[in-house]
Each structure stands twice: as structure tokens, then as C-alpha cells.
Length: 294
Image 1 (tube, rainbow, N blue to C red):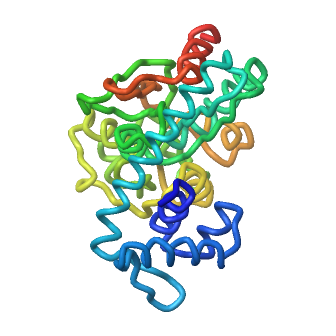
Image 2: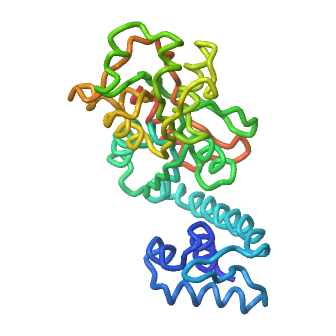
Image 3: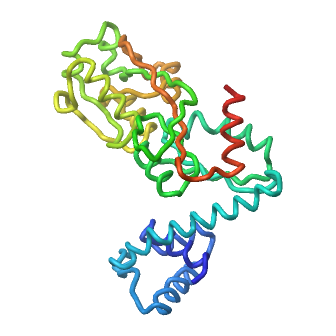
């Protein structure tokens, strides 16, 4: 069994599609199929059910998936340890971030880090807050960056910045923005939300709670998986939403969105790391660069 076979297996297991896994790895589909067939043949066990053009994990494959990810994570840490001996001339920084922070806050900071350490390869994955925390716990990333609350005791949570939230509506509901928003306004207007597990959705729930309301008390017109999809729906007249000012700034300037007169709390951007795992030199250097950038 080789690390390359494990990488291929994990890629297929996470996409449940041979062609998509091959594209992600830069391999041919035949090479991916051969690697999976070699694993299954070597140990005499089926890892996938072939269902038409897609695949499903068998019970053995599902159990093996977690083990394979851990081995790849350990191999990555070993590679990082050797890379540190080169004085950060080489290495791999694995980061995962929730959508607002990964789309708007991290890119300029990663660019600055890249200019300082051009030999460090940077991988950034985007997920919601819950998924980011799970990825750091599983070892898929050394560092996670989120805007939602995280309380898992195995994670060290460090505040790195603040984020301004805004309650916005499209032109169809502009009247809401022309006066102080009341609890009755919250009940009357439809809402567009991110999916469960999103820090932005948690911020919306906190706003409603400040008016002694829950999601069950308001009309939810849409649940969408990205900030940009939520913003676009609100611009089109779907209702109200809570988003980071970074996400809605362009729409506010263009006049397709209006900010409601509603006091919003400042939320924190946080960096996550596993308390029991040693950080690579690249991860330490990136955290240090954030402190210097302020």
C-alpha cells in the first residue's frame, strides 16, 4: 500500500466519482481506477459499490476512509517537519476557512505571507464554521479560520480580528430600512439564510434572539449554501438577511441593497488549531505574520 494509493482512495471517497477524483488529482481516470482495483485486489475486499456512473462507499470503505485520512495527515506533518529544517524555504501550509473569512479576509494576508515565504505551498479549503472545526480536529488542516462560535475543548481558539455585520434588504423591501426595525418587521419580512453550521446563520439567530424570536417565528424564504448566493437572492427581492459588510459593500454602494436601521453586534474572526498537535514552522510563521499585520 502506497501513499499515492491512499490519496487516490480518499479523493474518490470524498467525491464518490472516479472522473472528478481524477480531475482533482491531475490523473487519468484509468490510473485512478487501477489504483482502487489494486487496493481491493491486494486485500480481497470491496471498498466501493459501483452504482451506474457513481460509486458509494461500502461499510469497509467507510471505515478505511478515516484511517486513510489520518495516515495522509501524519505523512503531511512528517513532510512539514523535514521542510522546517530548510528554514521555511519549502513546506506546505494547509488552511481551511469559513466563507466570509476565506473569501474576503484571508486572501490579502495569504498574499503577504507568500511574498515573504515564496517557497511555501499554500492550500486553502472553504467550508462553513462547523466543517472548518471538524477539519482541524481531523487533521485535514493545521489552521482553521472562522467567524462563528466554536467551543470544542480540543481546539485552541484565538481572536484575530473583528467583523461588522449588516442587516440588509433589497429595493423591494426598502421601506423596512427607512425606519427602526421592530420585532413585528422581523415577523413580516421573508428571510434568506445560510445553511445550518454557518457562522453567518448563527449571527442571524442571535439577532432574532435579541428580539425574543427564533427561526420558527419568522418566514424563511430560502436557505442557500454561500454568502454570494444569499446576497444575490436578497438583491433580487427575496427578503432580508444578515451578512458581513465585506459581502454587501458593493451592493450597498450600487444601491441594490439597503442597510436597515438595526444595531448589530460585532463578531469575532477566530483562528483554530488543535491543542495536541505540533504546528509546523509554516503555520507558526503565518500566525506570526497575522499579528504583525494587525
